[in-house]
Image 1: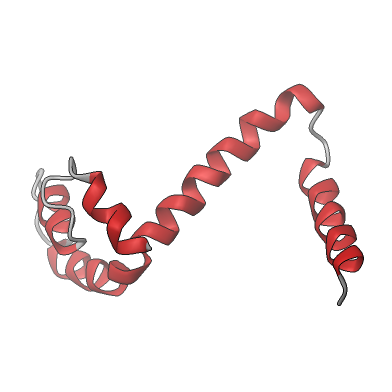
Image 2: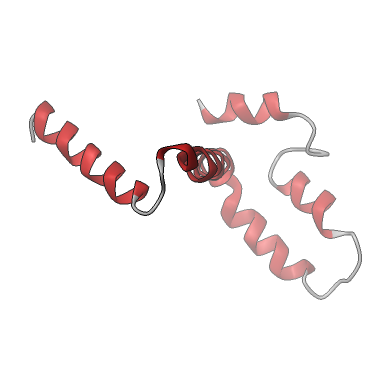
Length: 89
């Protein structure tokens, strides 16, 4: 696939994604999707551990899940985003 074919392919996907949205509405869809994708990329290395830990914690009620899952994800209390950024590189 050459550069022009790849560019055309990307624009075709963009046209599909825009679908029923008018240009002023793109930001309502694309920005949240971009943020979600960024979270997915950042958290991917620890996803399996977090999911396994969550399955063990499901039986407990209350507010115990977030702090424990943040620690498993390597985020401590969730406030130290610089550490997570360093891990993605």
